Length: 162
Image (cartoon, rainbow, N blue to C red; front, side, top):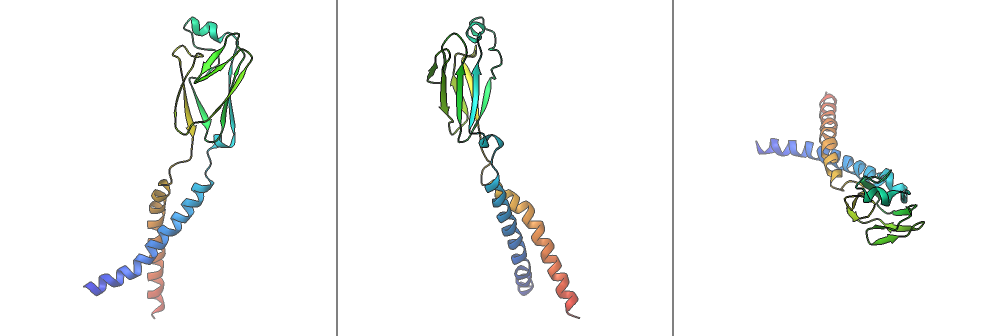
């Protein structure tokens, strides 16, 4: 009984392991090439239009300003103030007609700001998935692939014995 199990393990283990290894290598290649679409654009821009301070003072939402922004992983956020009043975004005060360049953080979060009635501007960082996702793909693709190639090998050996 033990000899039969050992023979099956010696037959199937290289095929299953090879399938998982090949699938993991392919998955790692795709992960390395996977670059978020936003990461290619190194700079995002937020324009504070004229009349924003008056709208916020009335409790109305600022015109054409999103509640949250998606930033590139290695990029910057440029805030341009076209309003007649200075505005604060995070720790930056942007005078009328001025601009500030804010480097992207490493984690999602929020800025305090004067361009929203709630006083907060949320942001998310566009990033690639965790490297652990490559292992999921390796097992999902590698197990059946290794099994199919192993089965083909077993069938081929049995056909060659005659």
